[in-house]
Length: 411
Picture 1 (cartoon, rainbow, N blue to C red):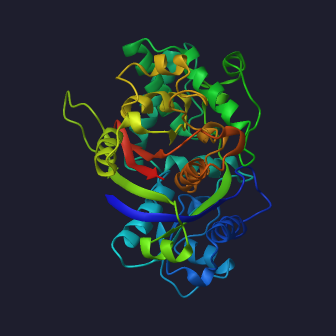
Picture 2: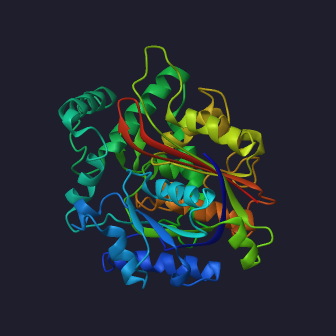
């Protein structure tokens, strides 16, 4: 969808393990930071869209998640719409907020993504991910994943998916093995993604992990689901991120002279592909987002993409048109996606290092891009950044993402 919404303010918490804080405290921290950045108060907000994926399973909070969080931040009366769309919950909430501003229905809308995944019972945390597939096909999915794990690691039972790790790591591991088989991609190249993002994350004070790792460090780490070692897998986490979007009229009244604008946001679901059909939700979203924003891959200054695993980032390069199919490994080897390269990717550290509180991730990407386009990213600043792209997917059905949102921001 072609958008005409201005980012007036952004805010987010540090991502990590916050067992001592609930959804309300975490969400309120991000909201208050975004309002302060916008120079507004809660009384200025006309509507709010709140993204959350797993509170019902992890904390037991259902039905009125956004209202509960926002009331704790002193915000009531306004329409509050709760959005649940797997790992794309936050970007979907922002998509709706920006659409309402673009349509002229509101001048000031808040979009918030908030999540708590850490729990003393880890099975609750991992169960949240297991709900992001077709649960009626769970037995078939698990059997297929276990068989693939046995083939990748002879002697392995293939057990553990959904119990001591997110089953999505097994899904990504299967995709990684397929990419290696078809294109000759190497484990070292996947490790290169994790090492790059650890370098970026080491400079981000809000990142969950700040240790810079070498390729060798990544390769020598414990195996999670072959060929993925621990640093190649995004961690669970707690956190929140918020954006205040406003109309052009409101932006002028606020004195925003060269603001960051949301130029396009495209949201699609995956579909059942015909035999031989190429492409998927990410390719479709990217194609439409580029057309609506009037840009192409070569115009991008900085990208935040959904690296829930290291192979996912490498394959997203191809979906976004940064390189041809099968050439993602060569792109990471070239250093092009590292800070200082022609198209830095995941300057925040990405999901691998910044963290992945699923219901907050999509807006956290937009926070990073907004700060990059403003020139406020400190040591990890991309020089002269003018156009940013966010790529945020969620869930899995068949061979495609269940939800995919791609956004283009410009300054």
